[in-house]
Image (cartoon, rainbow, N blue to C red; front, side, top):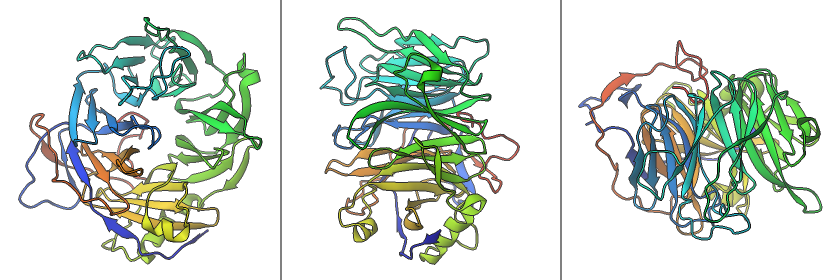
Length: 446
């Protein structure tokens, strides 16, 4: 796989917010140090699942202190805090989609969607009603087995069904339907028990279409056992629902559908490798550089003119996404500036690197710098108010950073800090795989 020679543009954050503490920068900030009061951002979710769906986008962030903060991208302020949302580390948060509402009635006034779902290693899945000021969840569902942790969650069928991946190698389904005047129960409807043999680290609902344009919803599940399975959850049994199983060959930590009809799926592993597949036929499209992917990406960054100060620019992979990144270099390559598969990678200094991943080449697009002082944990997209999107990243420095990748927006004053107690400076050392030394990087844990 070759890399396309572009001058990778370095961009500064459009805006940044400190979500869990306030600390003055030390007089002599040392390389490799970050602000740290012990809290990381573990998961982010945007209320705008589609950039055209919401003009006032909010971002929910799960912190390692078991709290959830809601950030308004229009004002640049943290507008809501749910303290002690769970008794254990929060694995994932997700807004309900804008179309969620009473059965048969789409919710046309959800800006942001009023409900947020969270999964936790305490073994519970909770739904918080953001229309109230209460920190008490509207729904709490406990996993069925003793000591069963909820490691990931996804909403499908317009938010009426939740899939939860657990530490007991199960995928459980919760009923989120409700009628006008009643609340959903969150009742456990059943589980897939034969899908995996180890922890389920990712679940993802996705609407897909076939060649004739017929739409259906599928569910992808990924696990520490190295298997990625795709199901049709409308079928009455687990065996009938199974569409394909992909043997990735390494523990999985991130998956994403891609393609005009979402016919492809991208898989990232704990070994910092990436592969792309046609999920329906279970055929691998590419290993994308194999075990040497980070070296390949670092070489592409170096050839693009970015100074990496003698070190490796890419130390870990954050995630992949099918999106229109609004980069002007993409517009030169594709006049329609259509959606493409992108990969976000980073290093322990807090730098991020966005690449466009095509079938036979890697195009370095953006070097995001100056926002984070620690590793980037997660990202999502928000509406920029003019029909495009901005990238939002959450890191181990408890910061949310917005990035205007097109460079067309003028940045407001930054940072937007929120006083939440004192902070300290801590050095975080990473091994070559981008993991904290001495700790297994487990989904949802710092």
